[in-house]
Amino acid sequence: MKSLIIKGAIALFIIGFFQADVLGQTGRFGATPEDSIRALRNLAMFSDSYNREDYQAALPYWRVLFEEFPRSTANIYIRGDRMMRHFIENADSEEERAAYLDTAMMMFDQRIEHFGDRAINLARKGVFYFQYNNRVDEAGPGYEALAEAIRLSENNPSATMIPQAILTYMNVTVGKFRAGLVDNEYVVEKYAYLSGILEDALQRSHDDQLATIDGHVESLFTDSGAADCDALIRIFGERVEESPEDPELLQSVHDLLSGAGCTGSELYLTITENIHSLDPSAQSAINLSAMHRSLNNDEQVVRYLREAIELQDNPEERGAYYLELALITARTENDKQQSRQYALQALEDDPSLGQAHLHIGSLYASEQNCFTGDEDEAFKKRTIYWVAVDRFIQARQADPGLTAQANRLIETYSVYFPDTESIFFHGYTEGDSYRVGCWINETTRIRARRQ
Image 1 (tube, rainbow, N blue to C red):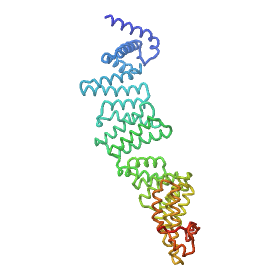
Image 2 (image 1 turned 120 degrees about the horizontal axis):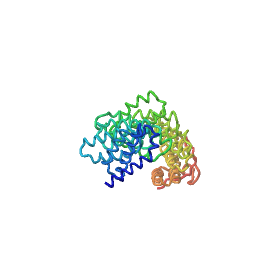
Image 3 (image 1 turned 90 degrees about the vertical axis):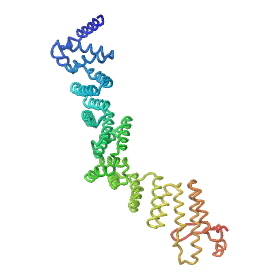
Image 4 (image 1 turned 45 degrees about the vertical axis):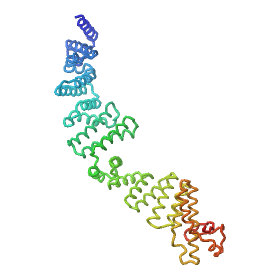
């Protein structure tokens, strides 16, 4: 009895304290002074029960406020959220659980109506729904709320609750696909939409939370089974064909195909070439060169290597490109002189590129046409091995990591040097300078084959 008297006194104190203010706020606490007194009395009793965590006692007062005075205070919804969670988690039956979940959904809708923040509260609604109902075949209210929240926040996905809404939406989408409720094209489209929002935001300003969400969304998509190359190509091939110069579309589909492991497709190659055409760079050119190499398109490999060289400012990187060009020229065109020229340009950019010396030495060692029909043909052909070995020696000097390989080549080709008698017969002396002619035109030192 004493407790009731005290509670009544508290309620009357609150009513007296707020009455003058309430009378001037028609609508928030009702249309009449009597409404206001009723609103404040229920608010006081609700607050008292809620603070004691006696949610069952608080529920009748909450209902009066929710149904009759929905604009009286945001605490109806803030505290109502916690109460509904409690009732759902402690429900005695699925029917009771479903009823409280329906009430919670109405609560979020009413909060939006009277207190705004539509995107955030829709996100709250959707996330709440799927925390307590994981049946994707009954996902309507929560799924639609998440979709609308994300749509309203496309330019600000880091806003309160939106990252969680995005992740929940993708998770439910994958669940719907696995349940056979949507096809893989639907999942692909949703993934492309969500990842596009996240990537745009991350490009504007890095946000660790968004970066984490982006990674989770990608993992959900990759593991979903919906990331089928045929589906991706079927969906996006036509779009790319219609808008071949749309940089945002091209990059989005490029990343999508890359993430799904569809890099061997013709569409991926086409998109990569279009991106390069719109914004050429050394990296995109070298990537295209590698892609065409895997397809044995030697002409395109050379084309993009040359573009990469023209666009590359870093000498070491450019040197590596020149060496690659040297190797492919020797293999596909059998043009040893041009191949050597590329290798020399590689060394000009990067003197430590021992592989370029190895390549030049190998070009020399494989030369069969020089001096054919010349007087002393046999001797002159053997002199080529001097300059070949010179290059192998230079290779290990430039890059000690090549020492073992260079030594094997030196040992292999030194046995082809002219012998002492042949050197003497042709009027030369070991150690003297000698210029090897033909297209090689390099000066070397005369050495005899060791017996």
